[in-house]
Length: 516
Image (tube, rainbow, N blue to C red):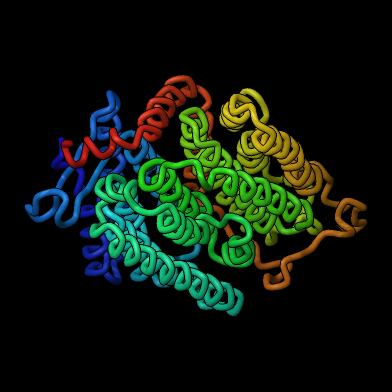
């Protein structure tokens, strides 16, 4: 079974090479990309089953004995996130294939660039999840970031270049800080192997531990878009094409959250910075949801809700308990699926109506009932309406917070409840104005939109474009996956609880990797 672990990295990177060799043959490129991601999805499911009993799959690359060289590690949390990421990447790929068919493959970018780059992005995501050492984790981040630099500027329009420039500068800063942190960790403990760092960091002076801890959290916090390091996200994501925005919103910030989980539970598991994380969670939730309320553009609104819900994930980590970590894992899976779905649906809205600005939308419930359903279900899920998985994940986080029984935990619980209620407001406003409001009333305006901020870098309207069936199928599949998370919430939460309990005992990871 261990032999399957490197395949999750090798298959997409080899697929990227083959797709590049197939330049000028879009059908072959699509086939290669689809086969590669389907294979990784299948392997991810097998790995989830293999580690369900708590076993760990550890593979030293190149025959080097552990802890020398690169080590790939799969446990419950990495297997789960790997599988969900593969499913999301495959669904978004199908959406992009449909978009390419509808546009003749020449509207957004040359296909010869998109499909290989997309597989490189997948390689980086998968590598980050199975990395057993900090430097390989850094490499995984850099792989996905280099690919994202290309994807976010696809099409070469002025808004995309501007947003891409901001995104690249911020990413380079975070990468430099991450690399500096890796160097500092190596200087302090003489290794970059995560298991060995966890062992040796306990003997470091408290001040050194906190310095290394803060350096890593800052680097990962930029990548996860936590406040005040989230300023770049609402301006960067909305300008990209719908498939790119969807996969960025669903996955890239969660890789940063995953790195924070590893840092807090394995590398530096002490409670010293937990109060700081809870305060950051509060600020991230509040700033994100207030930003969402002020937006007239659906993409920007969803970008701010993305920031807000990262606060929920940081809340679970900051609680420092097995229950909090379990709820974070469950909620991360939920949010990957639902956030991706909503951005895909927004892409359908833009193509159908020519805009994503709610001041210019109306009557979509009657003209596009399928899109209305595809928006409503994940919107209810994101808002935490029972019995959807969003409600169950938030309930788990709230229960974990209450069980901490201290004033700061109660405060973050109260903020989380208020944020959840406020999240419903911009979602309901989108539904009322874009779907429920008759189209003939759009010109009359609304008091609900008088003070809203439109995206200054996006045109108010673009030409409407056809919807290819694969685009609708992919979005519908993501909606179905979100509903499946609700149906299977019990087993999934048990799986997450077992993963959370294991993560909170850092010695289990050390013994699983080092054998001692």
